[in-house]
Structure formats: structure tokens, C-alpha cells
Length: 492
Image 1 (tube, rainbow, N blue to C red):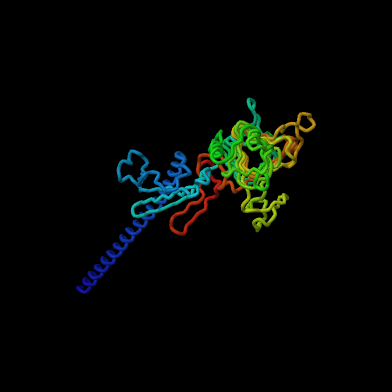
Image 2 (tube, rainbow, N blue to C red):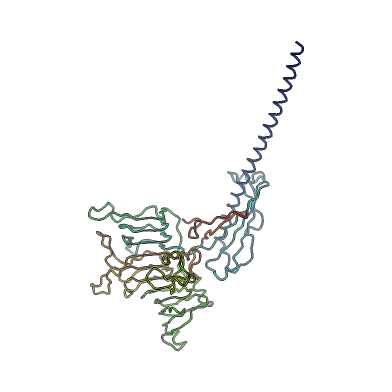
């Protein structure tokens, strides 16, 4: 009996020891898992704080618009910042409410002074929560209207009684498209990239459907966003005008410029002719800083550009013939895959070479941009076009050639390689509502020059926002390319 009691006692001790060991192991594991969970929580929170810090720096840039002459890194907030994650601001007075800290720096690109309207900045934010630190960096660039293939503030034309302007069958738009109003659709226009409108609806011509007409069936191949944020248009080309005075060229009064393929231009301008004893004045070099502005007169533009240039006026710009680049951008849709720089011919039938050093052109009118009724059949305009006060339009767009009033018949296709930005939508022709085919004017073929997303024409107007080009976490290996420099931070 005593032996049995001794055995039971030993067994009890063993059981107690075993339970104690298991309890200790369980407690140790629970503590370890809790620590790991806290580390994971702090790690995620530190990343979120770093991202919030980057967004705050971008908000700072929007408000302060740093000068392109800055070249040294700086702290926008003058020291380490504390982030409070409490639901109520009143609870943030306690230091225990602080979720973490972060510090920020802005490093301007060394060549910003050479590209004042497309300045880049590297933003670096380091966030700390407990013992965990995370560092995020992003490169941002000033947003520019040239990143749009098509932009309008309003999709109606005219003063007083305003009329809708329609995208119709046969129209093709390739590139980012935005309106601060809403689009009007008749038939089956094709949009090959992202489309966004501030209004949360579209207007269809055949609604309710007309049984004698084809249905409206637009193709939004890159997606459609309704109810997006508006982007305000400026009404003056201040940066361009300033640059033309400070190292560029200013012409006073009505001017005619014909661009020459050898990198020069022919100028017809009364004051310039008097000053230089020539009329017209041919072989004139492009402005050294690529900025040309006509003050107090209309600018008539045509020719072939070799170089980089932005032209502007405080009145109208008139296009009376083709405006083309001497070479086609190597990465454009007109150069076949595997094209050899300055060797391969473009596939657009123009006979031009594909080149990595192709020209860039900005066309900016503070009033409107008009394609003359004398422009040729199948006209092409290479460049980003902006009409700040009115529209980009075709002269006598609604009159046929038999009217005896200078009207035009169907003149083929208006090809834009670049972009169109306008205050109110301007018409380029009329269409038959039964067939959705062109009656007068031009069909539209608007193709985006993707170079303008990151490298707009010189001194082209800005939106006031910033684009994220790339971002990375500073781990030495992780690098993420943003969806594209044409994607704004908050606007769409």
C-alpha cells in the first residue's frame, strides 16, 4: 500500500512538472507571438505613416510651388513630425496617443532650371514606430496639360445659346482624355485609352433610339470614369510669355511663321522685317530657349519643325497648312517594332525617319486655335495644342463648298499627333444624323504623343498638381513603377 502511495506521489509530481513546462512554453509562445504581432503592427503602421508623410509633402508642393532654381535638398516641415492616430483630435494632446514620428525631405532635380515647367523632385520620408523604421521615396513632376490627348473645360460651343459638339462614328482618340463637363456621343467613336468626365453621365444622340438610325455604341477601350475631379484651366500663358522676353523671341503684331526642316523658320512680320531689312525673313534660327510669343496679333503657322519650340499669342493661332515634325518619334505608333534610330522609315506614309531625337512643339493661344478653310485635304498637326479662352476649331466648319460663302466639303481626316486642350469644345465639321458620317469638315484621328507625359513642350501651361513617376522603399531591391506618368495623384 505504501509503495502505491509513493508511486502516485511521484506520478503527481511528474504531472505537475509537465503541466508547468507546458504552461511556461505556452506563455512563452504567447508572449513571442504577441511581440511578433506588435512588430507586424508597428511595421505596417510605419509604412502607412511614411505614405501619409509623402502625401503631406505633395500637398505642400501644391501650395508652395517651389522655384525651379532650387538645387539643394530641404525639409519642408522643419523637423520631425508626430502623427496621431486617435479618432478624436482632443485625444492627441496626450503623448501616449502618438502613433509614430516621421521626417521628410525634398530634393530638387539638378536640371530643373533647364525644364522649369516640368520640374522634378525626389521626396523621401522616414517613419518610426517603436523600434521599427520605414523609408519611402517617390519622384514627382509638375503636372502639365500636355499629358492629355484631349481635354476640354466644356463640351459645348458658342456664346449665348451653346450647342453640344459630338464624337461620332469614325472618330478615334488615342491617349488620356478628360472633360470638366460631359461627352456627347453619336454612333461608335473609339477611345483607345482612359476617358474621364466630371459630370456623372454621357449624352447620346439617338436617345430614345431612332429605329431608322444605327444605335450609339462608343468604345471605351481604356476604361471610362464618370464623376471625376475637375482640373481648372489657366487663361494666360504666363511662363511662355516670360520665357520669350527672357532669352526667347517676341514678335509684335500679326505674324506668319513657316517652319523649315533644317531647324530654321521664315518670319513675315512688319516690325521684324523693318528691324532686319528683310521681307519675309528666311533662315531665322529658333529661339535659344525654345520660346516664341506674338503680342497684339494673330499668328499663322505652318511648316516642318526640326527642334523644340513652343509658340504662343495673346490672340488667335491660325493653321493654314500641315505642321509636322521633320522626324517621327522612335517610340510612337508610327514606328514599327525594332525600328533602328534614324534608319527605319515611319509607317505613316510620310517618308520620314524614326528618331529618338524627334522634335516637340507646343501651340498655345490665349484666344483660340483655328484650322483655316484653306488648309489641305487630310491635314496633320504635330504638337500639343491649347486654346485657353475659346476653342480649337475649323473655319467655316458648318458650310459646304457649294454655299458660296467659303464653306468646305468633307475634307478627309484631321490628324493630331500630340494633344488638344481647349476651354470649350470647338467643331471641326458636321455629320449626317442618320448615317453618323461626316458631311462637312474633317473626321478626327487624335493620337497622343506619349513623350509629353514626362517631357512636355517647353513652357507649356501647368495644371498646378504633381504626378508620381516612380516610388520605392529604400530596401535596396524593391522598386515599383507607377501606372504611368499620365496618372495624376488625385484628379482622376
